[in-house]
Length: 84
Image 1 (tube, rainbow, N blue to C red):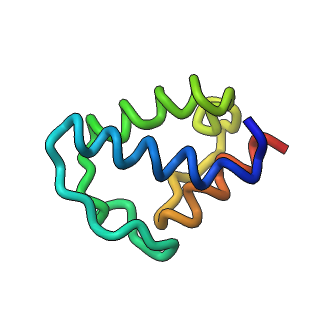
Image 2 (image 1 turned 120 degrees about the vertical axis):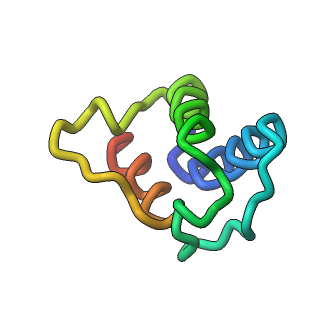
């Protein structure tokens, strides 16, 4: 996957997971706090697993001192930075 497509892939996967888990999503703006997105912890677990398959990276296991991103922009950057 090309790094420029990370945002598109991440937002697509968020929408798919939300639909499959019958969750109502908040508008996916860059400053959206992930805790206010409408996804629960199971949804995030599914999302991270799918993103590892789709993007070929898992930033949560790639860095031992990684802190969980707070906003959607930080989440996207988290993946982009590990892929570099």
